[in-house]
Length: 383
Image (cartoon, rainbow, N blue to C red):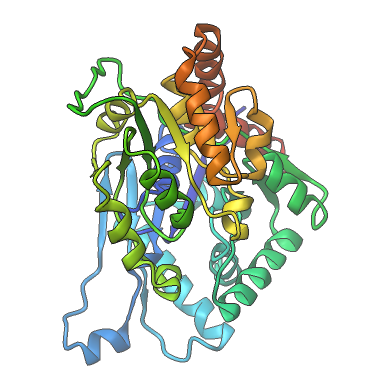
């Protein structure tokens, strides 16, 4: 008999961030189980309320089938473990009371996707199963932050009940730390059934990128490539997003120079289907990441399957995971290689059997498939 779970997901990405895996996971899980999302990014404390001269307001809501709760640290001295556990217990009780959840009717699971879940789980006061759904290679340009990440993942690999990863690269990297790691699909969202093309009134050919415009891009490569090929149109479709990494690298000028080039078009969409309508207009899709950063070198971009679903040829920087898809992905290291591959891809039509196989690969990696595989592992684990 399938267990009925109460799944608590600590969420660290604010709404609108391009990496929406926390939201997608919660939405898929809620079709089968009760899901309570702790908005850790919106956590507040009594100190902030007092010094900010604000009223204490509990933030809790039900959105679609998920429950959302913003934690409050009512007790001071959170550097002490006892106080952190007490704060955690208070928030658990408040959230259960607000949503009228009887925890004894469920098997409790903490399902985290970022290293910070180690701290959340360590302070959690009730018996539970801990699951680390590792969706990326976590790294930081800030030395102190990097040390924290390593400590958190060390705790997870040693003490969490279940660990899953979504790429062969992550599997190889983490297998040395923990033997019983499970490889699962990436998780991506196909478009709606009635998607029609979004017309882009620009001359062909179109070389396109979707996703955040930030420090991950290889600006030096892109500028030379675009400036040397004024007869090609380059589209960058996604929000300009900045965090502390971008500030350290001072990329503002790089972004401005890139997006102001005469053969560059910039835009963004909040509607996922509109993103697919834009991709449909691309002749070639690109993933121009700066792989001097380990975070990029060991990542597994979800946009790959969005490109694949639309049956597009892909040109990428040397990202480790993409070597498994070399039939459909060209890997370029230099501007000359990128120019050569683009010319080759433009000269020949993309085979129809390639398009069919790409779509098949993408559909094997939907959120539904990913969650089903993880839940099967969870069912097999003896609570």
